[in-house]
Image (cartoon, rainbow over all chains, first blue to last red; front, side, top):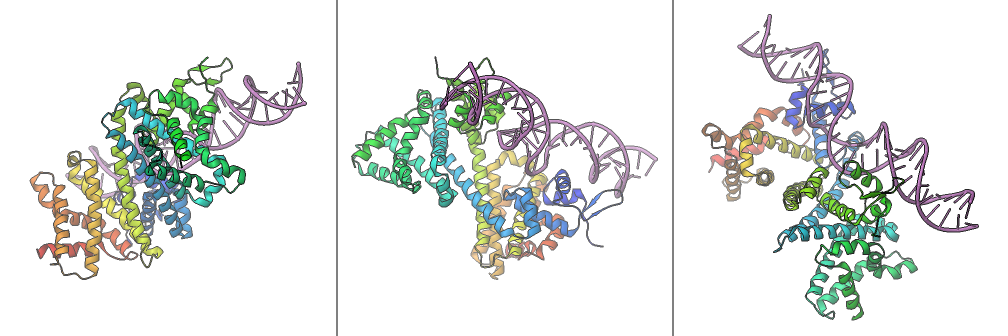
Length: 244
Length: 244
DNA sequence: CTTGCGCATCACGTGACGTGAGGTTCTAGC
DNA sequence: GCTAGAACCTCACGTCACGTGATGCGCAAG
């Protein structure tokens, strides 16, 4: 007689609850090979293997319906590599987030107001860039690739921070470091260009324009609580670009 | 007259959907300051600020009820630092996961069978270590701290991999590198000690014992598909420890 | 033989919204 | 003033991966 598993034993061995096994049974993802005459589930060795595969893929964050499809079709490589790409994106996002907030907590004055201001600015920048992307660049997105865009977005947020430091330190706009930042800023702007003549011409400045179009009223409210104005940074950027 | 926002305008500006605003209204997290006589929501400047705070905290992964509590109590620092600690744990987990799977995809023969075997082993090791922790070490957990345990777990998984390489290369068990691994292995085991005499004596070997108690049947099934047997690695470990 | 754990099936709860259905209101152009 | 269409409203059920009882049968140990 081959080895059979009860629900409880299998659950303990695999690190899941019995309810999870019931759920997998309900949705047809893992139907026990047998049932006893009294209705108790009996899992076969094949079922055990299948469960371990299911849990492995779940640990990678793959949803159950795609696990089912992958297991039935046998094209696991595709699922795994796709999921890895997604994990990479998430990881970079998380990293950026932790870095920024951690930096804030490490400052001399982690006053709640300042902290909140910074968090608000983060989400502002985020929705602002999302705006920019949506505007005329949605098509460009597929071409550039999600990952690359996220990288650019993170870098751009960094440039804003650098620029703000220079502005506060009253660094002359002709400073080579400032000029490097401006050049990179415009490079990133160029990367978002669509190829369309009328759009392209405006894109480089649009990072600033859209802010004025959409964010002025919000900015006023926020600036009363935050430490600096994005508008000032953008003005500084404009001056630096003009001095080029 | 102060500036007022309609639901749609605010949603666009903050990068959320109108439904999200409705939801926040329903649960009392963000109730618009006014309603028109016809029932349309009118958001005040205060509401806008509150929404940006909500979204900022949500980006950190804080659940809505805790956001509400934090905003009403004003103790944001606690929430943010707690959330950061959580993010650190997640980030390390993700990193470890990506590293391992990526390593597998980069091997010469990323055959579906081998890939799956490795994934299965990952989740096996995971549930196995969870077993170890649960057994008599639950109390120790609070003392050591969640983060430290996760770090140890990750390191231990790395040691298994290293040991497997040495075993396959037939490195003599007296090799200094192997001995270093064994020493570290026992150090980690020691870190899990409870202080209780009877328990402590068994903990160092228990990493192997528990496997035999719980995993033999699973291992047999898996080993037919995977490339190596954990039992062999553990035997190699025992030999190395004996040769010390 | 009974005590008590394990297993079974409903069936509703969770979190953070998504997604229509079906009706009202606002805004722009004529 | 009228009309088209965009935007708003309120139910109310769907999603995902289970958690959490309630209630009742089955099964191995003392």
